[in-house]
Image (cartoon, rainbow, N blue to C red; front, side):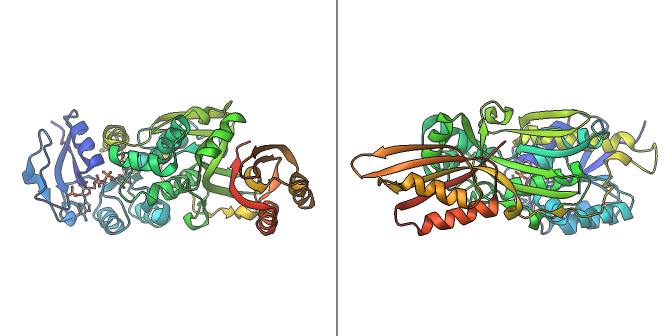
Length: 424
Ligand SMILES: NC(=O)c1ccc[n+]([C@@H]2O[C@H](COP(=O)([O-])OP(=O)(O)OC[C@H]3O[C@@H](n4cnc5c(N)ncnc54)[C@H](OP(=O)(O)O)[C@@H]3O)[C@@H](O)[C@H]2O)c1
């Protein structure tokens, strides 16, 4: 009988438990050691022999019997050191850790390559959606030059609820926290960090050039108002937190995460609640959209287990495993600064209801090379002020910022309520 492939898990939380339960269906795979933080925690996992638990993750890393280590704890420290040590001890790695890949990916892939080991990370980008393997294998003949994606379930849930219920950001966040869809500290999700980690790695593999996380522009959803949702709807859009990446013919990359008005004619406008979706544009394939569950115990386990089985299936065949899945690029992409980008904009302004305000808005835009696609004024009779909604044509971000400065100094403009980019 062939020897079973031995797996060490580091982490037995949401993802780790799902991986453990799913792997029970594969008789050739055996989980022989699991590291956790709190060894005394009640686990209630059917079939778990608690004698394989340890609160020292280096016992997993240093175990000579273990072939593959799945790192499922998250964060940089101690995950980075554990993975480096595991590679040096001859293990292949599977990880779901988006933050680690975004910040330390280059380093880790170099070390893996030096020791002839692979790091697979399907779960790290969009939970259960198969994305890395398709890009690296069946889409390998494409030049992918654009990615538009919804990569964070928590923010998509909040925005969908705000849209459906007309509720405020804070009310929906409170509800999402009660239901377990948002963390007690939601910063990582609502400020766009999580989506920025994911688009960093996704754009790196799709463009075959390394994207530096610190150069990825990021804005969250905390300033989105129910009024913006309503206005967007009336104009034929939905507001979504979009992870966007584009590379031009000169190899300059524009990678960012921020809210966007998405036309209702586009697929991403209809990706609701915790579902994630990724549209890849490439040649020769055209546009491909993959969607599905971006998080959760079993969807994420599906990707981790798929990676484990991919590695396991190669054992004993060759000493150079999964060549297409290896990191095969080291050149860093030149990055476009957000101020150099061109976008269409949605702008909401509250102004005194005086003659000439619309004219002043138009003049400031005209003087800064911005054409208006539409401008709508709604009057508040009692307060003698008006809500003005503007959609621009394509304009340079730096010009738009100049115009916002002018509006902020204009006495007849009470407030610039929102500035949101519009997906073209
Ligand atoms: N949750 C998702 O849906 C999802 C989706 C995609 C990717 N991910 C990624 O998957 C990873 C795990 O997420 P999760 O949601 O499963 O986290 P989680 O539920 O908080 O579980 C973390 C696990 O790691 C253990 N742990 C933490 N620090 C440790 C240490 N120093 N040594 C040993 N064990 C330690 C914890 O032990 P105790 O059980 O003793 O506390 C727990 O079992 C993260 O990188 C996350 O970004 C998660």
